[in-house]
Amino acid sequence: MTRPADSELLVIYKPEGLRRVCTDDEARHLVLAWTSVLRWLRGADPDELPESALVGHVARKAALRIPRFPEYDVRLWAEHARGLAHLPNGNQAAGPLAGVVAGLLTSIHLQRTCQERCWLNRVAIEHLYGGVASFEPHRQVLIPRLLDGPVSIERWTGQRLELALASKFLVRRALSAEAVTNLVHVEITTADRAANLLKAVEIPAMLVDESGCMR
Image (tube, rainbow, N blue to C red; front, side, top):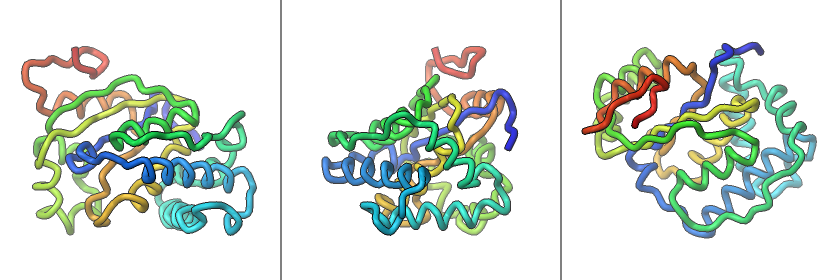
C-alpha cells in the first residue's frame, strides 16, 4: 500500500492506560507475545509458538479489519517483520504501560518524536472519534472515561508503522479488563492531523509550536 509521505503513528494512552502499571510478569508476557507475533509473521507455525492464543487473536483482528483498512494487511506486516535483523529478547521490567509499549515499538525501529501529557476535551474527542461507527453506540459510556484524567499523546515515525498496529491488539487482549476500555489508542495518521489534535487538547500554561509539540 502507498501511504502519505507525512504519515506517522499516533499513540494515545487513555486515562486508565496512563495509570496502568505493568508487573514484571505482565511486562514479560507482553514482550514474549510480541516476539511470538513477529516470529509468526516471519514464517513460524503459530501453534508452536509461546502465547499462541494471543497470536491467533492478532491474526483474527487484522483479518476483520483488512476489508476496510489496508494498513491491517498481514502480508505487509510480514514483509516488515522479515526485515528485522533482531527480535526482542524478552527482558522487560515492571513499569508504566507506556514504557512497555514503547519497548515494543522501538523493537521494530520506530522513533518517538513527541510525547505530551494533557487532558482531552470534547473537541479533541470528536477530532479522534467523530464519525467512527464503533464509537457511536458507546458514546455515553466512553466520553466520561476519556475525560476521567490526563492522557499521554505520542507521535512516532519510521518505516514499519503498519506493523505497529499489531501491538494494540496484543495489549488490549492481554491487559484490558473490558473491551470498551482498550487502554491505548493507536492509529496511522498524518502530521497535520496529529498537530491539530494537540492544538485541541488542554495543556495549561503551555503553547503548541509549529510541529504540534509543546514547548
